[in-house]
Length: 407
Image (cartoon, rainbow, N blue to C red; front, side):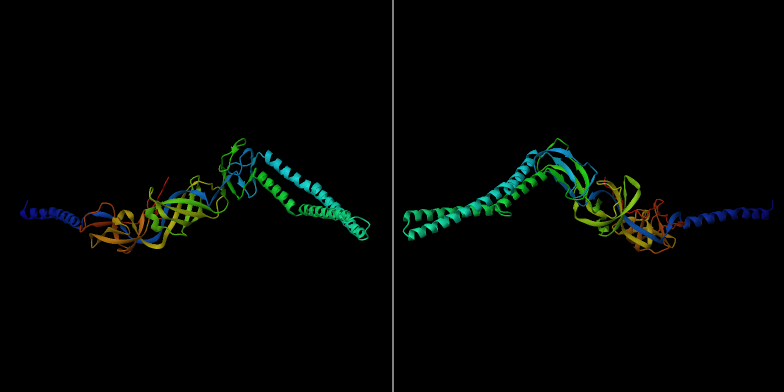
């Protein structure tokens, strides 16, 4: 082989090697390929999720004012009651006898004692009239000296006695007259006896639902013992303990969607109406109450529920995957971005925060490429394998924020 031909063949074989070496050198200079998210604006919802229970605005404890034996119980747990409904009947033999006794005394007054007093008054007045006429007649006879003075004095004394008897009869008849003291005393006695008898019939004072019963027929009940507990009808609330770290996100009037554990396929609305002014030091939670209106018919007292309170919403927010956040502290954090082909660290200020996404309010702009996971050191040249932000719900649910559950 001629020297010229050999030289040409050597150059021919060296050229591909040089190209490969050049390509490898370029790749080495450009750095490794890393995945990066391209930031964009999209809707974002921030929620606080917590577990609580159903409570009524107030409960009424039903008891007995007297000591007696239960004869009948008319209600049980879950029964709806209205004001005046009969709940429990107690034995009332002695109290019923007192009522009959008081009624008999009142009848005796109207049927016997009052007529007798009026008859006695008429008789006493007639006797007084007769004694007065006799006294006048004897004074006339004494003036004519037809009788002795002693007889006149006897007639005058008889008149005095008759007048006193008539006055006494008038006082008695007056006290026994309709609406006077004697009748008032008897009617008050009767009212007291009937009131005591009514205490043996325990009635509902409010409308609501019977929660508990602690009495059965035959039981001896005494004042101070709780026989029934009634949840007042009206506003129904949810008592939800929330982690104190989420306190700054909550505000009165915020709306929530609630699901009862017993009915996971049904949801209903509620509104935050109360945030406790203090924190439970044992659990590190703050008590939050939500008002339910209208109240679903399946909702029961003390039922466990999960409430999702919407604490913030943006129709268009520059969102950042939470996996890309580094050295996060409060509303501040750091991210790694690719600028000029090199990895750079950028401080960012956060707004709304979700489980998968957070809002960036300062430090980045739409279109920036942000690295996540394990990334090369700052200043390293890299090549980007761009990927879109994950859709909410597929492992990046931006509508679920800071879940807090207390069982």
